[in-house]
Image: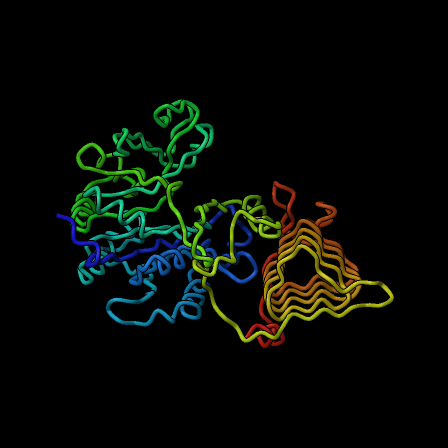
Length: 425
């Protein structure tokens, strides 16, 4: 019997060990979940905000790959959750609890931390990824899970059948019970949504499990060979034996601060430089698809004691402004011009400099007269006076910059200097 809704205890385990190889060089020194986004956030802030806004306050964050940046961010940004038995955001590094091996897959990562589940004794375990930018009321998915008495529930969304190569695909009946689960099939072989021959229902990599079921299937999976992965190993077998349901992500609704409207959910895979750049650039729009201004569903992150943004107007050049851009605290536009860009904390754009369609991360300095377009400048980097970035791919490569296949130039993160450290803190 399902527990009464008021007594349901849900433990969230966030998988935050992703390498993010296609986001290189942004992931040269950090994992994908800790990559900055939108001027003041990290990618992991979205899943954590969704959980907290949904009333799920017990969260373990599993790390593995280049985790120091992520650990520092979690400690700084999410310490407000406290450290009680019922409310916490605790970082769990890979510890080889079950032998001398690192995590061999997503299922093995949970298996190696079964002690955390047993100690908390929840009614359900929410296993969510930290690699995507999305807004979701997870409580609605949990209600669906309990109402259906599901062994497991998989968050799914419809996509064009030609796009299924990177996803697990669910074949469902009219009640959304999953009857077949295929990991990363060829488009021709992918199950279709009933009545829609050109669309498939794909997994978002977010799951809710009945606790006892999860423990049993992980122990069974660990005792045999294979990938030890939920998409490749667990679900193809589970759907043949148990009631596993697909939760329709498009049915999800978020409250808004005006109180009488709802907001539709949002989800983007930012796994490549091109999609990461485009998703950031959408924020400049008059009505962006990702609403960061819904105060009833805030996206939370670290707070810093930064001074106000400052614009220094150059009378002779008629410059010292930013248009259609997101500017974060501590920035100084000192006679330069910024358009269609996103500036993180403490960025300086010097006089006569011109920045267009760019993402500038913490402590970046654009020197006097420099020009930057369609580029990502990572933390602490200084663009010399009079130089250019994003205009000539060959020249950018000669300077040691990375030019993505999409044509976007990335200037890698620079070491902190005493000056940048002081400004960052």
